[in-house]
Length: 255
Image (cartoon, one colour):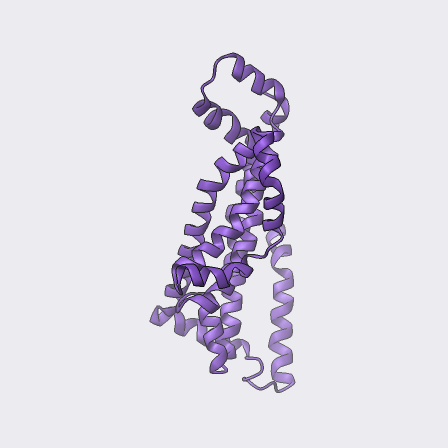
């Protein structure tokens, strides 16, 4: 409880300043809304279902792009981790691609896939893929050499090496890469939705600008921030922690 209270304390301070300063300074609603106006926009979006529609659209795109990145990125990262030749060949390209922000792929994504969900999923995939590949490669290289030698000496087949040695051994690094990649993916998602779709939180945020609906703009910003905090605090952070607790010690011990 104390930890939760400390976590939300800065947001409470921000809300208090918002509640006091906006009315006191007589700020125009077209410049910045009151808390009451944002709350009204929230209740309206809940009652007519539009908010749920946009949230589900954004979450589905994040989920699809992330799933593809994991399915392709983990095996490729393991291959780079076990093969110095593959790693040496692809590492320069990997470092080059990591430096590119996910949103920089939006123009090409729309040219290749058109305006719609496909382009957004591609941007999310791009953001998560390189982080997962790089961290998976690092995780494989940290697996105990004695464990690898023992498995090979016992004649462990490649499929079992993959599922029982490489994936569990690299799991702590994979979880870290996923958490980092999801942070980039969420920002790329919002930017891509602004440009490439007609639904989602990013699209609604940008559309509201045309009508000076600052209450909806602030509401979308709050929803985006809250969703990311919830994903990170209740899903990604516990996943990373539990993965490290379960596999990290075993990797270090080589057992």
